[in-house]
Image (tube, rainbow, N blue to C red; front, side):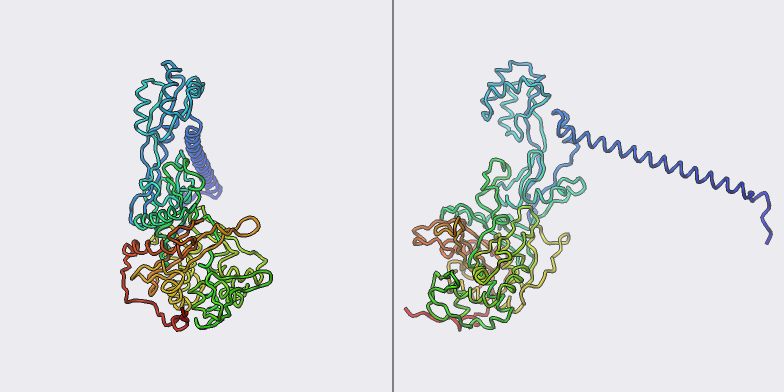
Length: 569
């Protein structure tokens, strides 16, 4: 092969010089590119800072410019696509003091008549202010806008601005939450998904909740009616799909209107369903029995325990509302809600196993849910001795949220798997959690007949909804007060599942401090006030969920009926 000619190959020093020039040129181009990028980023940062400044400190025109550059907040919809929160144009009223040309005292008097929340002296001071712009009212109603416009002074500003509207008013308010006057999420889903709702890229996709407006309305109606009937200070309710963990309805009362959240009381803004923690009493007893079954303590619902009229442990005396005064079976203990019998079962389970089960169920931790209003449970802590084990066994000495309790029943009856509850619709973008094993599938199956027995023959008779095979448990707990527990202030609840032959849905309802009535014969216990809510609500809601009444279907009641002793009159 012939060697290259000298004309085609530069000498070695010449090649080195050319390589050096090329590297120098590339380095200069890289530096110029980086400088250009830094300048561009700086310009973008200055524009962004200017927008933030105008929104926070600028005059009215500046705020309008900033608002125009901020994307409209995304919608929140229910599981069927019905709007629960959306952004609309609203009116705002303000003053440009320097532009006022009319008689300021006269204008102040007219404004005081139209907006009496301030007196004419305050309005007069605002009209004489050196500020460039002062808001009079945001989210002003059209009638007020028309009246202010009729004053006819160019210094009075009437403009449109984005406003958050909740078209269903109070429906699901504690789930949805609300925003502040500047459109930032303050509570509920509005706060939890604030970045997503405000993001220009994602705002086209609404946040779709698991709740159903129809089911939510039915639950709220029944709870509100009972709250008024029994003069309770508050109420809460949860309906869940036990397999997906979806919260189909959740409410807290007193009601809150998110369109005017700032005008609501602290009681109304407080979310009793997810933030409030309560001793929920005998609704805990099924967990104790299930723990004992999985631990091998209970092999049959016919196992007998001594159930005297009172039972002493150290300095504590445990009593029953419906005392047996004889030996009683596990089936009877649950049917008549015996504290004495359940305490003995819990003692056999032991503190270590009890704590381990409650931990796996999420009952010892802060509620696992999307919204920020998530309560942290109260429990005996490290000093979990024999008496704590017994009292926790029947729902005293441990305080959880109603959503904790609902999720516990979902775990117990979905085959024994814990899944965190979710307020977001389960679907392609939000797949089903695989769950973790808490109870065995066999225990989950066998507990069906036990809780159906409570409704057919026990303390939960008033919870029955003909044909819908409701099973569940009543709970009445005295509220803690200084130095002990109140004898007159109680929290009543009912935790139920339907249909019990093939469990699909769980419902928890709670009344805070219900009062006795003539219809309850002076009683304030859950069997008289909380259980009937379950009956009425299931009768309304089950058809919406595709659950059809069938009086021929039942769980395997042969598991429990042979062990129930008929009392002689």
